[in-house]
Image (cartoon, rainbow, N blue to C red; front, side, top):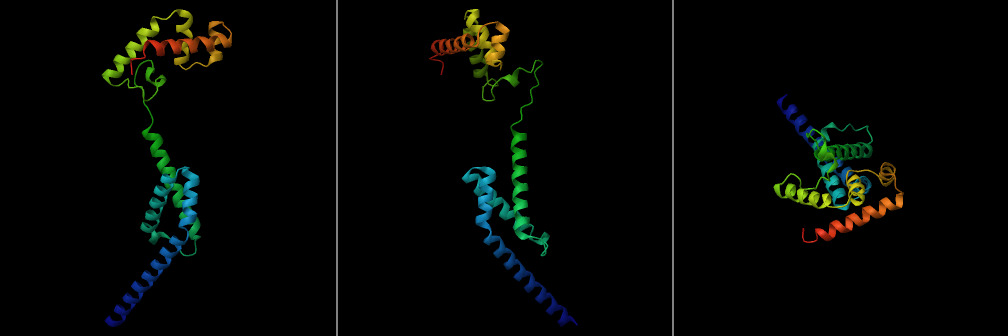
Length: 184
């Protein structure tokens, strides 16, 4: 009886080893297809290779969850798609900015504004001081443009033609660059 159990155990281990070899062979056979699909999802060669590697590891880790009568290729592609979606959601969550100011001022700032640093706050004050020195005909349209208003909205609010608004914003930008040329 004990000998029979040992034989069954050895046979089972051998079959598992064979099925594992078959599983790995199937996975290696579709690597090119997976890479193409990863490139379609990421549009970046390096990201596609990373996604392929993550998928391959996940598939190998979950080999025991694969059922033989299921489409292997579809199962692996679904795993890749889910990994991509989860990574995308993580990236979006990491880049989300929560503005805790009373007037939601930071939502209008570009994310790389440097406002959080003391140097950035000082630089912002200097830029605003130069802007405040502009005449109203340049300062108002430029400030509205910085606040996120579209050209047409500025034109309607100020009561000037669209071309005039565009040129005043252009001249304000040029003047700001000239006065802050040593700022960098």
